Image (cartoon, rainbow, N blue to C red):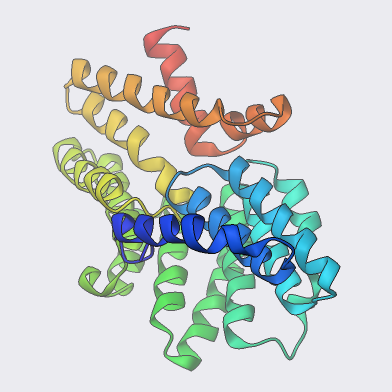
Length: 298
């Protein structure tokens, strides 16, 4: 439901979990683990609160480790690594990465998830040559299974890599190769629009960039599904496009909103080091805060 951009329907199910299921969990560790995992999912994808997700996933892991589980524990460690990554704690994310998922006999979804995770980590850390290699491997693996989701993932990651290299034509080619947006879940459509907006901005077509960035931001706000760090680019990209198009007052107002939203999310992080990494280590967030200091002051 979150995946398909239906947060209100998902909210109803979360309410039922809290009201009807959670009170019955008591000493049932397996049920408690899945409840915590559901809460973590909500924190990550709807509330955009990786700190809350980190706490919930750690609680779920404690239950499953006590039960002696192995495979589900490994999957939750992958989610825990994602929490660290979303918090900007990249070294910690790599430490948590479960080695069992790299085994030759791992299922297709697992192998593809590993490649996806690693590629996004490399892109965020601007290790573009390695990211291109991993994204190419993901595309090849997805193509052998005719897997639409991972094909789109790979194409959009390849587009972002080309964009970071300054290859605007190559970046747009990869976006087009990702396929029809109507088939994509909302968060992919937002990423696609953000890539096209950034391409247009770099081409000097600021008005078109504003149009695309506004469409991406409207999609983000209406569907609520947060799955990849590229989505963090959308608010600051709109700010930059507005400024480039001469709409300076609108750009400043959009920047105030983007900064306020980021700081509100950061205020939920109890650990000062994690709060700092959340704001400073993730490129799009740092981009927002740096612009705010330059244009709006402290």
